[in-house]
Image (tube, rainbow, N blue to C red):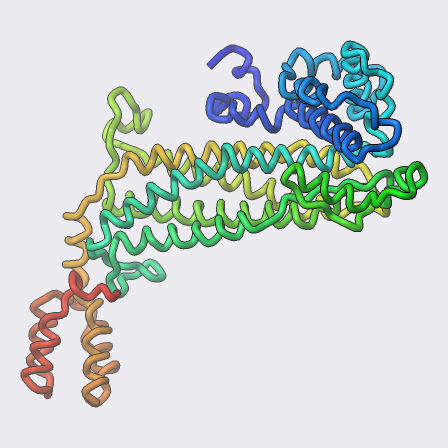
Length: 446
């Protein structure tokens, strides 16, 4: 950890900076400026492709050089934009002036007034931000999530035949299997990832109040709404229409809500694994040199799952605020969305930290079959459901009440007690044999 990260206010940029560094390419101030420049340049090229009459003679061979303005952009270049912003006191206008300065250097300033032509700042922001979010999700978050999902899936397959006592309301219940309980989380994650991939990344692109007024007054013969649709789609986004000056954010909120559900599933998983560790169903591999407790040398704390739970909770809190706040704006717009949008990277960062913790924690898990089997052996009462169900099938009188009386006596219910009870039943030897075959280890369903 360098000294600068020790001075960071947020642990996202401090304690966990090494984990979140890749997100700087999508959510830092430098990244936001670069994405804005990218949208402005691609928009200018799209105008040339119409072509607008005044751009018909623009040399298309210069497109590569134009794209180099954002593709080759460095943090030092973005610092120049920030210097311009000190004068303009407007971040997007500073981007426009920066691009025009580059046009001058390239000798193409004759066409410079078509940079940001007919646009308002939110056409750039409401395209840049969802684009950065989309690429961060696709390149950083989803691959890491799927790594964790694959680890859980591997454990589900490895332990699919290991019987385990279930706990409903914290009490012993019909046995299950270790692998099946892991598969529950695999299936839940698969469904939410499927839904997430179906959601569109929305962008607003329509001028000062969403109606492309300036575009129409300058070139009324051009179908500007169709142009805007195609331009936004070329960036991999979906254009929202109609809108006010800003994106209405409903679809962006849907993305946040889906990510929140994914995180909530992982919180549930983290708590379950934490509990299984406390029940000694799992042990944890110890890494040489690590300390579990500052006071108790014997302890190996489930800190990875606790860390994941905490960071996922932080992410969910911010996603909730984003999804509830952003769709609300006074009249055609107010500025509250702008400051909130700058925080989209924060919940993604907390989620990335959590996923790394889950990967680490899952890598430490060692199944303790002896403890799992011992717990099953101590809870023969759970086969009461199976016995009473077969007795019902045989039309035996009051089977539920009979088993209830047996299993709620307060006395220990073990194999011998169950076996003795079976012998007292007025059923055929064939049915008794069927009942004797039931055990906590075999009564695990499909």
